[in-house]
Image (cartoon, rainbow, N blue to C red; front, side, top):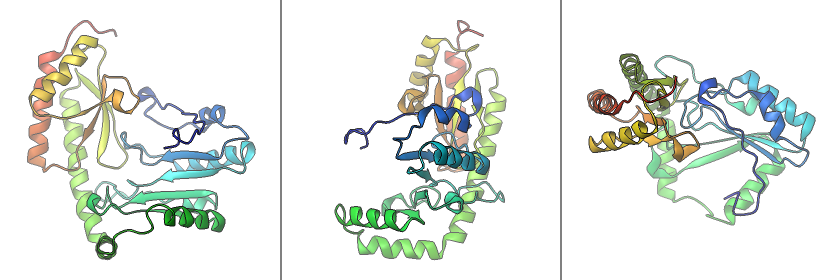
Amino acid sequence: MLTAVGTNIQALKLPFDKGYRLDPYDLRTTLSPQTRLVSLASPQNPSGVEISPAALRETLQLMQDICPGAYLLVDETYREASYADDPAAATALALGSKVVSVASLSKCHGAPGLRIGWAITGDAALRHQLVVGKFNTIVSCPRVDEALAIRLFECRAAILADRRVLLDAGVQRTAAWVRANADYVEWVRPDAGALCCVRLKYTAFDDVGVDRFYEAAAARSARVAKGSWFGEEARVFRLGFGLLSMAELGNALGALTDALKETATTGGRT
């Protein structure tokens, strides 16, 4: 959408080898006095990596120094999707009026069918502008969806608690799978959320082996998202562990194990 209206977008790539961690110093090179919006996600999709409060504060300071008129938008859709008893990360809104938080009911609340999300800001002028923009596009959500969303919020504590149990079991099961297949894969362990990034090791897969792995996984009905879908190299893939039951997840991971063993090569570089 930003590209369609002619926006100049400066992207900062976060590499697998640095754990997808944001270094505000690197962000400095993408900012200029013309910058109007800095957009981040925490936890990230698809890596599940959180941006620390210190990194967010440093980002805001950089913006104040370089582009004081800009807003910091933080996608916090997965913020409350923590594991077991881990506390949910604090919202970035407390860092100042130039921060905008966006989220929805689609992810950690498990209600994507309602198609309801929100944007929150302490900046009164921006809030008015967002409301006007909404009225000039979709006007309002269906009343039934809004009523169901209110009911969901009333039950949110129980819903999130159940989800955290499932997410914790899923991330633990995935961690065990990575350990068992350490000759073939490595990963960035997520801080929260239902997704993670896994990489086929260079020592086990050459480029042909990478392609064969995806073919073998698909043949076993094990679906993962190839890295090229989200700006990564092909040997990185997104793995979701927050939807299936543990029995189904175990079967899916078993299928991936079979695909790894069938397609691993010795032609990769170290």
